[in-house]
Image (tube, rainbow over all chains, first blue to last red; front, side):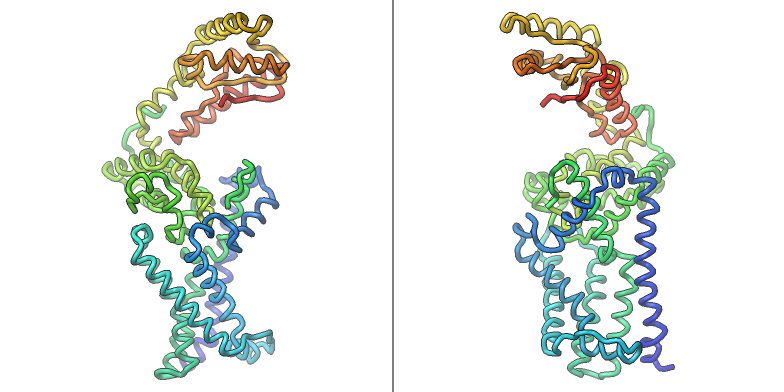
Length: 216
Length: 250
């Protein structure tokens, strides 16, 4: 089995398995522990404050966004491109079709190309923030840089592969490897905010909501 | 009681295990270290924007303590003590501005709880907690002094408003009025002024001979056992007097 076939087949299954399974385990563990030791969540449970809290932060409708317009804009564009580009990339769509004969709408290639560059640009901005602002530098750990690197690597290699810079096969292998690596680390690191964001926003939204003090 | 305990890594580990909950674990893990909490903290602003004062750093200190468990040493504990008691007032302002809603105040409070397991609580807070256990209020006001103060205030009040009263232990009243123990101790006039408002508003109210201090300084100490004991005092008084509501002083 070639390296390509390995990354395209069993390792991709493994990556998706760890990613999805890991997320499910995180959610199950949260419920298991919280029903025992976080009684206030359930005692003051409120769908209203849960949704309001998530809504006000999933779109920039909060004081922090107003006070930090540039960081907020970069953060939102970064997350948007990060999620949308790989899901609606034509080349990825072709792979899904090859394997499962399923297909969905895809982005025009030029748009996807720019979105890739924007993602990388936003990533560089976030890295510079870490380096230049003393109050971000002080909380920054090596893991923060590594995880930012792991997140950006699939985009950088994807860009290089699309434009066929350097040795195409090597770049493609690296692209697949980093893409799968990113999925795998999500459940085990701070990147788990992919799912835990919703839980954290929900519990804090309800905690402030029951005091009629919106947390945004 | 807090002061009887001393440096004891085993107890620290037990406290860590007892206090670990799903929210805390989640918060300590997902913090993206974005630094957006910096400007929201008055300690950061008041210390010439010292980066070490931002809420995320304080949260990280508690995370360290949780990871260390019984591997703490006295030097770490001393430093940790000053972080959780000295650098955060648990005002929750950063929580309101955190994109994830990470509650640093609750994290700090948990950190203080870890200090309680080592007997590391500010001396004045320890004294007030003792007073709560002994007298039911934070200012060592005895029941006799309390009743005397209320009666004295009632007399003063009646000079101005004949017919106005300060009811004590009136069963079935609509409202139980509770105060900060500083009021009978230092500012008793506050009580007669509140009574004046109640009288003119025609409120059916009462004060209680027990469980009348609505402050809870054990909560600031992170001593949750004492904190729930203190809250229970007011609740017991309300239930015994069969009042409909409990009002707390400003």
